[in-house]
Amino acid sequence: MKTWLITGCSSGFGQRLALAAAQRGDRVIATARNVKMIEEMAEPFGGRMITLPLDVTDAAAAKAAVAKAVETFGGFDVLVNNAGYALFGAIEEGTPEEYRPMFEVNVFGLIETTRAALPVLRRSGGTIVN
Image (cartoon, rainbow, N blue to C red):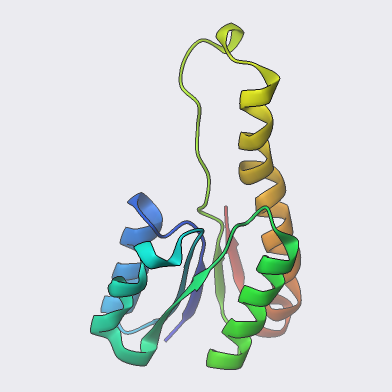
């Protein structure tokens, strides 16, 4: 049995991965900026899945999510940095004001979440999926 910490679970790949891992018997820490969007997802799995609020651009929130994962499950084996988004359209039509927030989430959010998780993953010999 593995324990997964997955970011960006409110929809898409993150949500599907969290559900698949829990359905196969693994433990899951599912996170999203708006935790209300994912709370019901955990109900069928009892204590094997918990949901936590996590804005990956907030380093303190990343540390808090990792601490709660350790408190609840004793750690985790897999970090999936799934949170992110894309802007679609011609690059010359975009502005720095549009692209900078995307980099905050997709690049710096990934870095902060990974930094918070590394001590736990080093102890568990775990894996990071970006």
